[in-house]
Length: 183
Image (tube, rainbow, N blue to C red; front, side, top):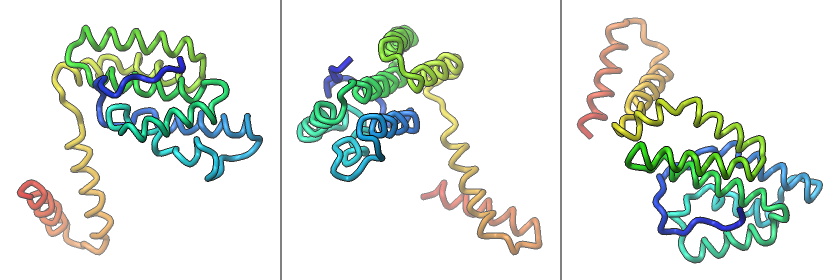
């Protein structure tokens, strides 16, 4: 699985599976170089490029990515991990359940070929959360707004440690929330 998807294929804008992907990159550096990655190693120097989506890469970035795979990936494990990450992005960007199922099956095939623990764990997670992924595809609903509101409340809580009056604390949360809604 050394070929990379074309830049015209649709994908979402997030970078899923980044921790597993970074772990694979680190393990490859230790295995093939006997040390951690250094700034002159292509995979380490371009680690942020490896996390970008195929649809966001410029022609120059594609050249750099192919150079990384050609020079710093003798086992094709890094390119396989990158391809699986891109396949997950394609799965999450689908419009129908039929497309999503097809992309899931394609991802499962790629995972079997890659035969890497990180990829298998990622696919098992997709299978476990398939019902929620179907809801995302059908409705487009996520918990992003709720998570953002909770983060805002936690930040207010951090800055408001001295509040002795619960009503003042509640008003501060509501006013901050209202300010974000208006903006």
